[in-house]
Image (cartoon, rainbow over the protein chains, first blue to last red):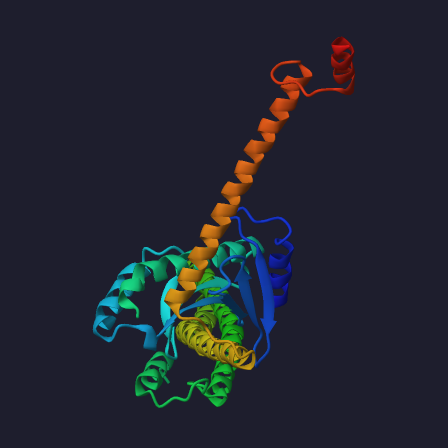
Length: 138
Length: 228
């Protein structure tokens, strides 16, 4: 599995929307490692980034930065996120540098349909979680 | 090296520059080398084990043959004694002595082979466990590396294109607005469909001569004629 295969699959879906009613726009990003930026139509503000390593496919969406959190609410926010980590489907929370992210990992043997489902779910979860966590954010 | 601890320490330390590797490439290479070495050792140990097990089977077979042979010769000795042939019985007894010496030797090597096999099995089990551990740690290192590189690629891209990741609340607001607009468009389209279907109903009624009828040229002419 590589990002180009994923991009080709997702771009093909643009013509006929997927069951989830999404259409995708994929852009490979340069750099040391191949990263695919996937924009879901209507949700371009929260892109999903995909990279493929030896045995895993990482799908990440950026939620908010450290600077966006209400300082006095940070501990409560972290507790809320830890509590939501298990019930939230297919995704988990993490922190990369000063950004809070939501991510999902798949085996490189996953089917393209599984990857598509992961991306759509991750996008749904991102919107859901920002809505739920607004209280903690500036 | 405990990779998990190393990653946590590096993050907690906060001294790390953005994009700087937590686990340097050298450590990864060392790990990969250690995995290759372990795999090689396991391969050699497995080959040795097969060899030792084969030798042990051979020794055990020889052992039973010797035991059978001793029993057989003991029978011969008794038969010779029954015939009062002391000389022959003595000759057979000497042969039995020789066989018993062989049996003792064979038993010793059989035990030796069994011990070696056990040792090798234990070694393989330990190496397998260690190899699985190395592989798990390498996977963690590679994932960390991969995510770091991906993060810097994403950051570079946003910096180059002079755009930046939006504030979470603003993003949500914009997505919601777009969603509301799509919903409105959908409703408008549905409304339009309803209107269109009203039109088609109207035309069907007209065709059937029901309701307000459109004036045709013929009907106008008829009307004018009647006025004359």
